[in-house]
Picture (cartoon, helix red, strand yellow):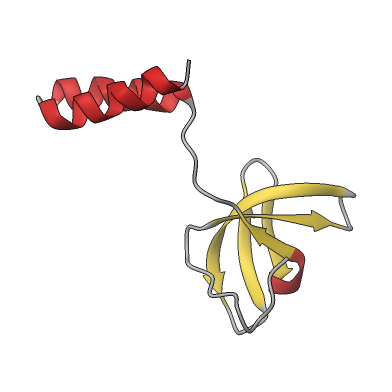
Amino acid sequence: MATSDNFNPRISEWVSFYSPTDHVTLTGFILFYSNKTVCIVHVPHRGIYKVSVFMMTVLEPSLQPSDLSALVDLALDTKDEQWFHELASQLQNCY
């Protein structure tokens, strides 16, 4: 969990938090940081939530193998040989 002293939220950052109204942990991204203790978070297919920074956890960015495959295709389309090799190496390490 975050604390207002060490939490510096950024718009578009993905977070998770427990919703006492819905009785589940939700994942969404920050739309707006309204003050030192509250963020406005969009949860896809659920809506907008006002969330205390004390109740949220910032999620680390990660790529799935299918994401890497799509990026490999993009590297090929843009003819970026160095990027292609970097991505192909990362994709190989997934398996």
